[in-house]
Each structure stands twice: as structure tokens, then as C-alpha cells.
Length: 149
Image 1 (cartoon, one colour):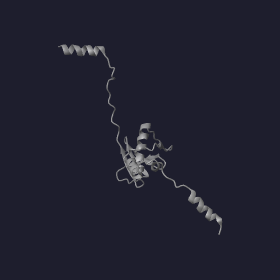
Image 2 (cartoon, one colour):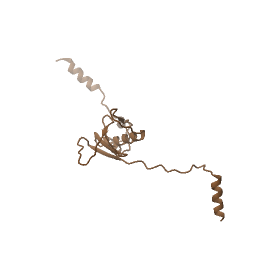
Image 3 (tube, one colour):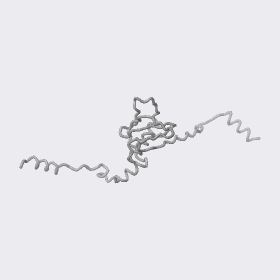
């Protein structure tokens, strides 16, 4: 018998078994991490890009929102996502994290190549308030006069 199979077995026995960093550090179980990812509590930080052949421009904030939605969809097992946002219907390939096109949602049309949909609501407008150091002498004088009467 050749010694090569015996040496391969010896090498296999001496090779350490890979263990995740979370398991070594006593971190959370995989099911817990997956649950948090599905809930959108964990971000991959993977960037979303736009297919260069598309005539489409998105803001950095829109791309960030799509990336967050992609993280949640990927944790749920989705591979080809339809993102509805700001009046757009965008196809996103989650393996490449790339917006691959616009979806035409005409009445009666069937989009059979998608396995997930997410709608991104517009962010509420930021509340505007005067700065803490707001001072307008004429306004303050007018307000003081109306209190006297």
C-alpha cells in the first residue's frame, strides 16, 4: 500500500477545524444573528452600484437605503429584489449588489424573475427650528409691546 493515503489522513487529522469568531468569543448563536439581520439591525456595509448601461442616477442616500433593504432581503433568502422607492421600481441583483434595471409595472404585466419586493418609504422631512441663539431685536421689541397692551 502506498504511503500517500496514510500521509493525507495524518495531515487531515492535524488540520484544525474552522470555527467562527462568534463561537470562539462566546458570541450570539447563528440563528440570533440571522434574526437580527432579517430585522434590519445588522448592516453588511456592502455598497450598491448601478449598472453602467442604465440611464439612472441615484443619490448616495438612495443607494444607502437600497443597501439596507438588500441586507434585509438577503437575510430572508432573496436573490433578485424589486425595490419600490421615490416613484421608481428598481431591479437589484443581490449577489452583485447592483441595480440592474427598472421594472415596468404596467397593468397585467408579470415579473416572474424576482423573488422579493421591498418598499422604501421617503424619510420624513427634518423639523426646522430656529437656532438656539436666535435673536431678533425688532421682533422681540414688537412682542414686548403687544404684551403691554
